Amino acid sequence: MMRFFPLLFLAAAATEIASIIWVGRLLGVVPTLLLMLLGAVAGIRMIKSAGMSVAAALRSPVRTASPLKGLGGQAAARTASGLLFMLPGFFSDSLGLLLFLPQVRGWLGSKFRVDTYTVPPTDDRHFDRVIEAEAVEITGEIEPPNTSTR
Image 1 (spheres, rainbow, N blue to C red):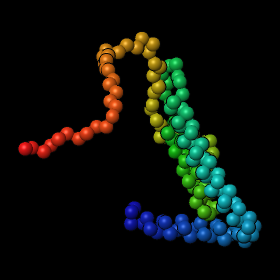
Image 2 (tube, rainbow, N blue to C red):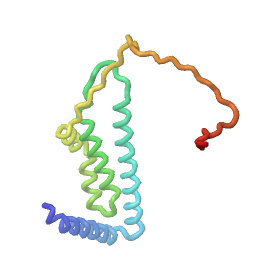
Image 3 (cartoon, helix red, strand yellow):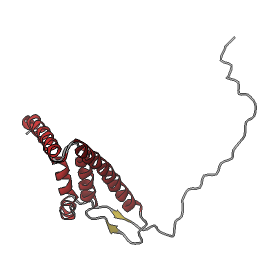
Image 4 (tube, rainbow, N blue to C red):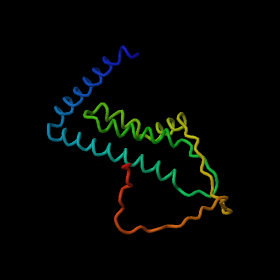
């Protein structure tokens, strides 16, 4: 498989260039460039949205222990979709749109589950160890110790 990776990369690049040329002939240069810029902005927003939703789900206060089922697969699909939108070209945008569909994200969420459980905090917290300390303020200049021996 690794032997065919350079060929796969070249085929993907050629497909992207061909899709840009095809759309450029249909719409013109300026609309094509604007569509590619719009795709990059949409990709950045999708990646940011996926990260924020995962962070919010992980830090949300939950009263009962509950699994966060499918969160990893759906966030990975949204991130991959955003990365595909950021690539210049319209073939990758069509693949990104496919990953953006809820049915595909749900399927990926079921295949790549994250079994994370949130546990409610206990109210009877007590600590076994108490450390007491006293602070001493030192004023003036500190001189280095005299290391010379006579």
